[in-house]
Every structure is written in C-alpha cells, then in structure tokens.
Figure 1 (cartoon, rainbow, N blue to C red):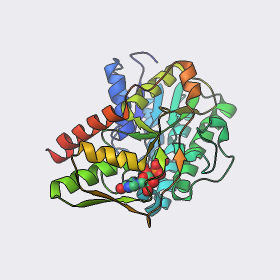
Figure 2: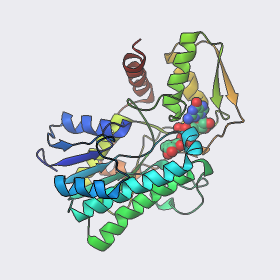
Figure 3: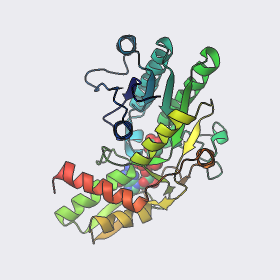
Length: 310
Ligand code: GFB
C-alpha cells in the first residue's frame, strides 16, 4: 500500500471506519474512497458490484457492520445476522471480482466460544458454543473470517481478518443500543445533568472486558495491512481487563456523578470474560498505546463537545 493507492474504507462514518480514515489521512494516504449508507446500501449485491466495477479499489478496509451492545444484539438478532452477512459477502465477493490487491476484514471478539480458556487464542475458534446474546452477530462475523480464508484458498486472494477486543471511542453510539462503555458515558452524563440519585447498570457488574481505543485499533489495522499476509485470523487487544463495575466507577468519576450505582441483575451479563490473546500481534511488533484512563477522557470530551455541546 503506498500513498497513491486507491483505498476504500467501508463504514467510514462508524467508530472504527472513521478512526481508520483518520489514521490513513494522518499518514498521507490521499486517495481514499468512501460512500455513505445513503449513497450505497452495502446489503444490496447489485449496487455493491456496480460500485466496485466503477471504482476498482486497490485496498479495502471492511469496517462496515451493523453493530451495537448487548441490548441491540438481543433486540435485533435478525438484523444483526442478515445485514452483517450481506454486507461482508457483497464486499468480499466484489473485491475478488475486481481484483482488489488486499482486503482487511474486521471481525469481533464475540466469535469466540463462551466457555474457553482466557486469554482467548485464535486457535480456540469453533471449539464450543457462543454466548447466546451475541450468537447471530458472532456467527455472521465468523463466516466473514471464513469467507476471507475461502477466497484465499480457492482464488489466491490476499484477504486477511482480525479480531479486535471490545472497541470504544468517538463516533460510537452513546444510547441504550450502544456498547457498554459508550452507553455508560451517556447514562452517567444524563444522570449528572438531571441530578438523578442513582444510575441503573445491567447485570451483576462482574463480567470483565478488555477495552481497546478505536484509534489504537486503526493503527493496528494499518500495521497489519502492511505486514500481515496470513490466512489465520489475528487478535488485537491491550492485555488489560476491567470489570463492568470498575468501568462504571471510573465513568462516574469522570462525569462527576456522585450518586449510587445499582446493578439490575434481571438484565443479562453476557460473556463472563472476553480477553483476547494478543501474543501474535505483539510478536510482529505492534502494541496498543492508549490507557483506558486516557481513552475515556478523550471519548468523554468528544461526547460533551460534539453530542451535548456542554
Ligand atoms: O458492550 P456490551 O453491551 O456487550 O457490554 P458485550 C455488556 C456488559 O456490560 C454486560 C453490562 O455485562 C452488561 O450487563 N452493562 C451494564 C451494560 N450496564 C450496561 C449498559 O447500560 N449498556 C450495555 N450495553 N451494557 C458486545 C456485543 O458484547 O461485544 C457486540 O454485544 C460486540 O456484538 C462487542 O461483539 C465486542 O461486551 O457483552
């Protein structure tokens, strides 16, 4: 990939896609192609094929996906499996048809079995059942990994894929459909503003997650696009776990919320732990730079300035 390569970032308005665009622009890649959801519905095969036939991108970052937290996954399972399967199938197939030099597919850490040893190694995929709340999304993402491997095996395409830890950052969804970190920023900020006495958190607060800042993930994506050419999926994480309770306490602090935290155990916990084993990417020479504290500060500042204007 050089500074003049034609690079298509699918999902450029989302949290991860926008971080990839920022990282590319910062490093002087000037020939980026993006298309809004309105201009190109990626679930529509004929439209995606026409777009690829016209643009013929050299490189593709596939960060477009229907995403959300545990509530969204549980409420819209059909949309999660259908839309994600369609988006990735259309893009991967079109990239093969138009001889894209390299494609990078972003999977998700919910592809791993619910009961597996931690940290989760890439070779533990498909050794057990997934967590039911995210199975439709997880199955779609697992098939995306396999699509990349199958197009490589049958047609020799250099299509790679990676599994990021729970990612957070700007351009995430900060409402009840969001991933936990963004959803909690939204909840705590609103409780503080309204002067509420308590904030209700879902589940027991005991599950642990590994939070990866979106701009660190984007940095890893560029690194792998340049260096990694293997069929095996590769994990991207920080190696640091935080419980949902610790996360909530931290967000209460940065939002200056002094009320009570109440855990609603009628709501699902999801996976008890989800720590990816990042030894392979570490061995290649990449490490995450942003601490959770710094990433949270940056995300909250962006949220206040951009979404609440406060
Ligand atoms: O990010 P999240 O929604 O999903 O985090 P996953 C869920 C954890 O945070 C659960 C607790 O233990 C929830 O019970 N939690 C507490 C909350 N309060 C809240 C809240 O207000 N909102 C949310 N969302 N959670 C996601 C998948 O799983 O992981 C995605 O749903 C994706 O599809 C991502 O794969 C990596 O971390 O469990």
